[in-house]
Amino acid sequence: MATPAVPAPYGLRLPASVRVPPAWPAALARRAHLVPLLAVVALLAVPPGGAPGSGGTVADAASGVLVLWCAVRVARARARPLTRVAAVVLALPVVGICAAAATAHDPAAALPGLVRHLQVFVLVPAAVVLTLRDRRDLTAVAWALIGLALVQGGVGVVQYATGTGASYRGEDVRAVGTFGPTDVMGMATAVAYGIVAAVGLALGAPARGRTRVAALACAALLTVPLVLSFSRGAWIATVLACAAQLAATGLRRLLGAALTAGALAVVLVGGLGVGSAMVQERVASITRVTAAPDQSVTDRYTMWAAAAGMWRDRPLTGVGLKGFPAYRDGHASLALSSGSDTAGAGMGFRRQPLLSPHNMYLLILGEQGLLGLVTIAGGWLALLVCGCRRLPAARRTGRRLDCALVALGLLGWQLVDFLYADIGGPSTVLTAVVLGAAAWWALAARPPADRPGGPGAGTPGRRP
Image (cartoon, rainbow, N blue to C red):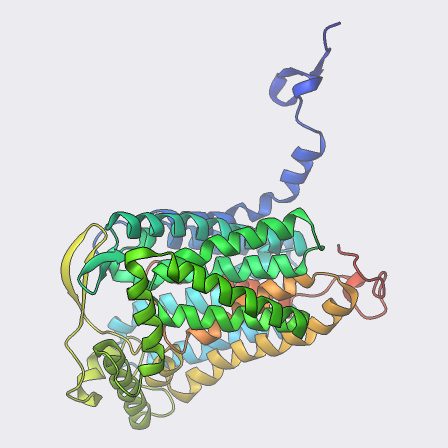
């Protein structure tokens, strides 16, 4: 007997055996509000067009659409979208950023910096907070980060294997993904985000569940492109962030994971073939930053000292946004080189000028002074404190533990990485998304079931 046809959307009639389950359209409709946010993450896989540093990317444009879309939603709702604490913390950086732009020596040159800082530290994080609604939304963003990391990491591994990556010690073997040799930290950042998100999901998922297995498999796969990025700062930040996530769930698990990671590192480095010597030398160089630093480390120390000198000259407001390149030579020693060499990954040789100190805290201090450091870095500290205050309840009840580990892990990674890097390049908008995810966990109003004494508050293992 033939299977009867049933009504379907748009006038189609499909057999019941191949009909889409009724729950799927409803589930997709409930997550439709995430499309602008997920588009920002997905479009970071598109190679940036134009000359390096020539302007924004499609992901930047998508972030503008996300902000505009959230503004329209808030205007139509005619209701206060954020708690008072969230509004204060998210808006606090505006004070330091605008003050630094207004007091800059060249306000016209500071205008692009004003737009970029507002995008990364205020507008996009606030839009992410307004977009996310519940635990499932944050886990969807976490899986999007993992998916982006797998794409970028896969491209990076192919670049290493075929010798088409960025130049490193005379060989085109450095994995940079689609970001190119002018943003060598782009792929490393995306892959590290993916590892931290995967570890958080695995630790917060039920034991022996499919989510845990899939997340752990992704984390293991992503260690390969992270190693091949040759980014010491990303390595350090990833190890510390994952260690903190493990420590939050128990010291026994931390010790077990440390032993497993050590064994995995031996296998990876030993199995990388020709590149193993490069990896070992790069790892060893971490401990030689003071005894026998290479030129990149010398340049970094010199620029750090230059940023500190700028702050001493103008301690309250700094030299102004985008002022570091103009004041650099007046505060740097002769040890600073003229720039770094970039080549490979589809680009010819070019000399990359050193336009920032590669330390976000010192960049803020030099360009925005104490006012900027307190308002911007103080906001990050507030996110960390508020997020950690919610962690014990998540551990005790089992509710949204994966959200806590993902959000705090990503925030911790970023705060550590800012010791070795700053904003800049096509991957910068991804930093804004991560800060927004951390802000949602730390500042968003909790549903009644997650509050002390609320329904299900004392029932371990239950999640919304």
